[in-house]
Image (cartoon, rainbow, N blue to C red; front, side):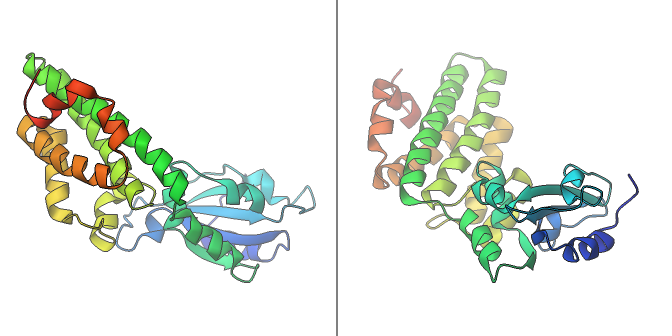
Length: 246
C-alpha cells in the first residue's frame, strides 16, 4: 500500500460519494496538544448503504497506519453506536466533512453528554470501584504493605476520575488530555488545580491523609447525587475510609 498523506487522503475521500463524513480525533483535535510525533487519527464514515467499486473501496483502508495518518473506516450506523472509552475521543473531535447537513456534528456532540439514567448506572459502578481500591490502599498502608498501598491508591485515582466525570454526565478523558480538559471545562464544584494536585500526590505516594481528605469530599458529593446506597453497602469498612475504625 502506498504512503498516504493527510491532505491527499482528505481530497480522495471528499471526492467519493460513499463518504458522508470525516471526523478528526486525537491531538490534532485538541488545541495546543500537537507534538512533532502526533499523527492524525481520522474516522471515515461511509453511508450505511454505500456501494463502491472494490478497487477503490475505502473500507479496505480501515486500520491503515503510518507516522502521519491513522484511518478508521466505518459506517454511519456503527459510528453512531460507538461508546466506551472512545466516547471521550469523539466528544472533542473535529468534524472535517459533514455531508448530512449537520447530522454528523450532532452525533459527535452527543458523545460528550451521557443520559441521566446511563450516568447514574455508571456512577454507581465507578464509585464502588473507587471505594474498593481506596479501602485496599488504606488497609495495606495500615498493615505495612507500602508498595501495595501505593499501587491501590493509583488504581483508585482512575476510578475516581471516572466517577467525577460521570457525575457531570461526561465521559472520562484519557490521562493525556486530563489537564487539557479540566483547564477548559472544569468539573462543577471542584477547583481544578487543587484536584489535580491531590490526585497527583495520591497516585505518586499513596498519602493516607490525602486519600481520606479527598474521600470526605467525594462521599458528600456522591450522596448528594443519590449514591448513598452504594456507599452504605460498605458498612463498617467506611470507618477506615473516613479515618477511624478497623
